[in-house]
Length: 465
Image (tube, rainbow, N blue to C red; front, side, top):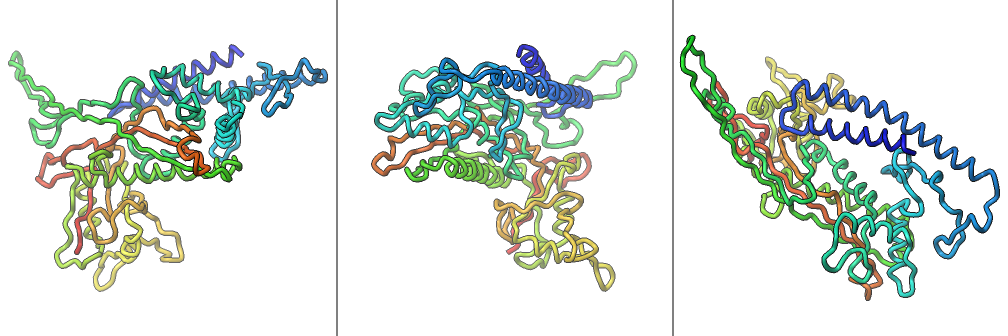
């Protein structure tokens, strides 16, 4: 199918070009328009690819159905069964979806790849047992892994050395679910790290004030008389450094669970992505930066708004919201969200704007409790998350622009399996590793051009004790 491959190659090239246009701090209007054009061409080409793939599959089916399969058309399959010989025309073009189904989009050879993670894990179990046979698909998966990374010692591709590599599309799927399950991870700026790097260093404009002589770290322009001498200025930079840190998961699966591939697949695909997502999102908010990501609450750029005079303990008032909004850096307000602990919701529901001797609700819609709340403050979405502190403590309500949080990761999720670690307990061991790091893009609050009250993309309400 050379035409299909040519179309795919073109789409990959255009996707990379679009990524370059958008993958920097401030893409221009022209960059965005050019990237949008490239993405539209990719989408238009997708339909043509799908039609050609369906045509190829139909042609393969018709060619095979013209005669009965003889013994020469069969080959040894799993468990000693005789199965139809797979021809190139029969290679299915499917991609596995989060619900376990397949759709057109990726070439899968059923003789070289597994349909589900549970199916592969069952094959690993059979290969690891005394006298067990090694599924050819395991060898194909390990062969591709070895082509990407040459081992200098004990390797994952040999069962006795420690385990088998989990097929790459399953591992990538786990990582995709990890990043797509949370409200926070989907909003931060993610930068992939190349295969030969263990971190990322970025030069960032060192701007802490918008006063003359401080913007862009020192850039200035002047009115100059005709033939007058020009005054030179230059920006100042600081270096942001991110170093990859490991986030690991270990699962012991009993022999009984291993006998049910569907159940095992469901447990792994549900539990590990959600737990890794939880830990990473918690670090984005609360991380110390020591062996983990640096959270916005521990950032030097955090602005903390003081409580009102006479304000009661463990309360939130409209004045708190107004003052938090006033400290949010205005150009970034369009990307900001409110993150709250669920304990905050009754406080928001009861907030009111005093008018004369009465008042009107601030948070509830006109229909009151009979209607669905807007879940917005100052026009920005309110998102309850578990990582915010309990009511009354700093961090219980945050106003943040998560696009100003930078996170790096490398190679998606690495997943391996072994029966040797817990052999005496009749359990198999599954190991999952992700390498990432992150920190706020700002290292200090910003003093505005006019005034002295600092601004930031990360605003919290101080403790009300």
